[in-house]
Image 1 (tube, helix red, strand yellow):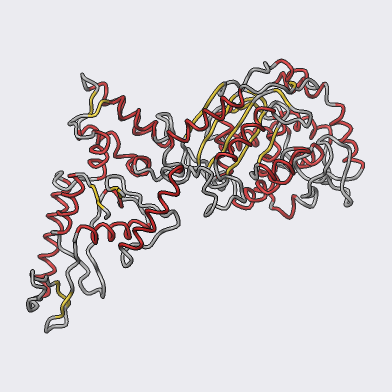
Image 2 (spheres, rainbow, N blue to C red):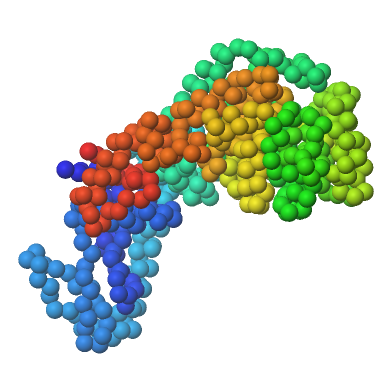
Length: 563
């Protein structure tokens, strides 16, 4: 038998809403729906959930009857099931005025605190029965959802909290102070505490990431790149992983605040900018779309005398020539840096002049590629090849941290919208094309193996970074300087492989039948089989009111289904 457990607050809220008058009587069907914290945010599945709850505890919407004037009225059944005769309303105007007055009175009661608001219900959820919430308890609970107190979307809330803390002696928030603090960000906070983010159980997922990080940390082997002298100065012991989901949930492990150069990880980003500015057709007049099957710095073109793709050096040099054509290098560099800052949600993006100088001084191979491209007329007309190479070296020398680069990856995962600012940075066409080429060409000569075993878009760089995208879920940056013989981070490859072995993130994992893998997108992802059984039982017990949604779970915050 299925039992339901609900908090006193929600029970009172449901009962008070049932007593409120219903408007829109002339509609054919208008069953009463109790609005509560669990369905305050827009969620198509929520109406079904409330109907399921009403059916389970015996709530019933009153049927409609028609009076002599053709107006539909509400009637209530008596205990024996009989329906009393309908009331004949002679004065429609007075009835509508009375209804409006009752609604206005109900709204005043809600504002007065008789009916709980979203802010009140959030307070009750965090307080757990206490009359006040310590400020540190609120911030701790917030971090458990994956959000950071420094999240730009929570700026107003955090500023209000600081101001309020200065006016309180004990550092505690009562209901009214809490409401004042969170009301400007109540939608985001409601989603967070209702576990409506893409990774609902973020604490358990973060612990899994930490375990994968420690496993890769113990891995030896590889060699730090030394063909660019400045890169050879990094310690081989550096190792960092940072995650940012499409909802802005953050987790980091290791040396995530140490700046390093993007190197080849910048290639998909500048390709995305070029497609965003010029469109796919124009960009691919100059660059192909196929994997080369050769080393990334080979002097080799395809049958059409084009670079094979924008992820190898030849293609990236040509792609650089498409950025803001006609402008000076200074203007081009500022233009790209502005894009990078937006992609990173205004987190750290810098420039290493030492690496730029070092790369230019040791860039004979790239100069050879440049002259070969010039000979084959691969550049747009009027391009200054040596100036383009300078800009190419500069863009490779853009600095990031693991944390800021994970936001860049998350922006790609989120269809071009930065998850922590909400700003549209790239168009959907640019994002789709970029992820497609990252999937097929992003990991040098290891691209086929990576696509087979990991099955996710990624781009590696000789500084030791791997920019990994889980579309519609999260972006990840792994960084460790020691590289394997193909130029990919040894620890980074291990982490990506372990991640997909644990979670069903591979593009071709069958989400319906892959029960052996963890699905972090479900609440209690490791309890998936049990949840599927719960869904089946609900469908049997409540066939008329419960239809399983795509996730097969009920997402109440305070109402839980217990087997």
